[in-house]
Length: 239
Ligand SMILES: C[S@@+](CC[C@H](N)C(=O)[O-])C[C@H]1O[C@@H](n2cnc3c(N)ncnc32)[C@H](O)[C@@H]1O
View 1: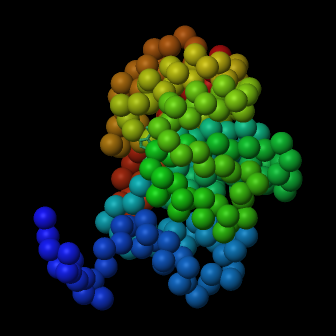
View 2 (view 1 turned 90 degrees about the vertical axis):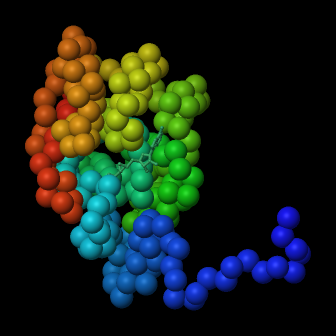
């Protein structure tokens, strides 16, 4: 055991041990346009894109997917949405904003449950959702998605879901969709969307939904950001 008076190795003041997500948080809160970002979801997303563009790799949706999904939300007008995998809340902010716009600017009756396993990442997402002025619609639930789905369902918070967005761990796409089927909150007409089915790829998931008589399924081509690699979001309509 180290002697009590032994000091831990001191960190040089200029040395940063922030994770990428903490660096993003500080980037947003030290940005000169912060006053214009408060209550402005699209301005916040643009700033996250600005930060992401400087990274080699960033796992949020990015602008191309966000634009295509905004159109889909405008057409579908979902009122209750579940997301598996919040990360820093980029997609949650985009979804909640699109839901509110599709409802004519009112939040009444709208709910987005966004499920995130990592508590620190979830806290950053909650912060950004609050900053965007969307915390009346979007709720981040901390814990593994399967546990949260069971709990929300048992609490009667998932009577019916219009749209589910799966974007957590590829190996969990099929088991968590099967769990959702068993919990019974998907109904005829509900949409199930799954990200990254081409890059990095979720072939087992695609095979599952396309081979199931419960869904009509197709792919929506889009670009990853910041790499510009072609990917697809699998869209499955419950029959
Ligand atoms: C690709 S990111 C989500 C990106 C986000 N949807 C967006 O576009 O802004 C995947 C997230 O899923 C989370 N995750 C991993 N396993 C999970 C699980 N079993 N349940 C819930 N979240 C999980 C990770 O911590 C990570 O933050």
